[in-house]
Image 1 (cartoon, rainbow, N blue to C red):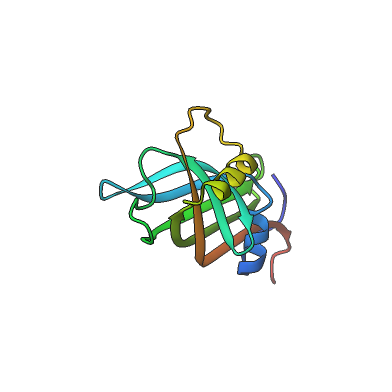
Image 2 (cartoon, rainbow, N blue to C red):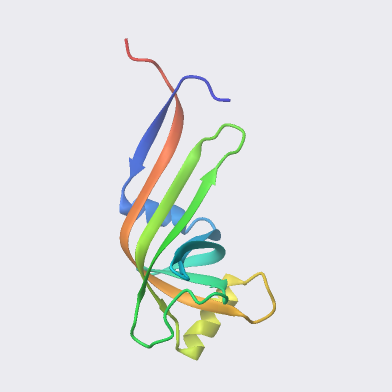
Length: 142
């Protein structure tokens, strides 16, 4: 474990989105049967949107066109040996990508891990972006 004191540093939204874009996997949090649910998912950052490829069951977004669903998406890179790293959470409105050509482009870029074709391509418009980094090696204040 790294010596010295640890410090939790809040990240600004821009740096948080950059870090989110640096890893391919995260977790999407949504409501299923009136209860919180979490699924692993692959993602990319496309302009100002987070594009997610998630398991198709259960439905994460509404099947009704134009209706968004509030979701959260979380990812991190935390070293299990020293417990240092970062975590980012995005809360926003999710819409299923309904344009078949766009969905195919995102599907190829995201490389969903299951080959059953039962996936959802989701675009999340970030509303709230939060992140933190846990750092070590700071001297104690006298």
